[in-house]
Length: 285
Image (cartoon, rainbow, N blue to C red; front, top):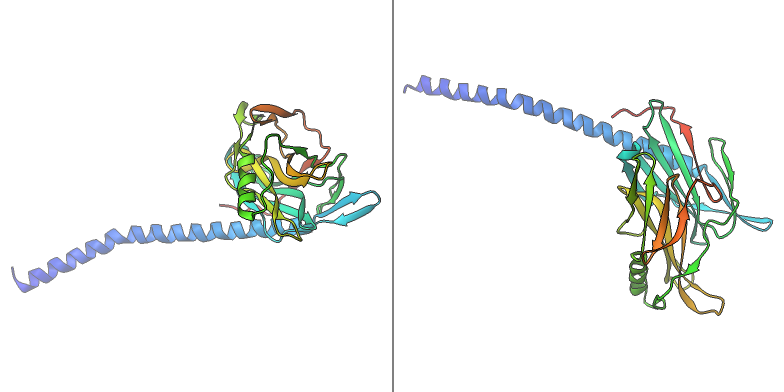
């Protein structure tokens, strides 16, 4: 083969290689552009949810006095829920003296053609709360959010922080529950999410005293919350107690050691509520 023929053959191969690579490069650029757009969408959604939650005023009432809840700077969870047409959502917590007093979902609602946010609020306070939202809605609870009851057959809270945290996780696994999903028209067994949604400690001893656990019927979207807390009974003895909060319009039950301890039926907004807010800007995928 002559030198010229060899050169022509090499050039032909190189040209063919370039032609083959061109579509790949185009696909890569398209993928990167889509990824950048998704990141921008996520940032915009988070910014709106943060500003809306900052503008949400939660007041815990004790007689005539009221104490303003402090919003945690970052959401404690971010999730999606495809069966309920929720493409993105954040979960926010308010505290008073380091203890949680309220929780709020800010969800991207894609169920209908008109773009909406779903706002779902639940009280964690042991007294009544009053809430005002930047979109104009207000809410006054009729009952406390948390009513604690002792957990039977539970070891005393340890004085070692690590062991105490493990105790709370073990106790949470004794709970279970189910809901009847209106959207899916079926009964669904809820699952306990592997990590606590929020943990809190004593401001003086720094020992862990409580943890909020989420039970979900779809993905990681919390359906109900169960908190495990170390607290003293009427005799002054320290022991483990539990309380629960509903965050769903579905009906269902909560069980402890496979025995029903709470049935939630038709939505009664005594200590939780939800509403919809129009999304002014629709973020396209």
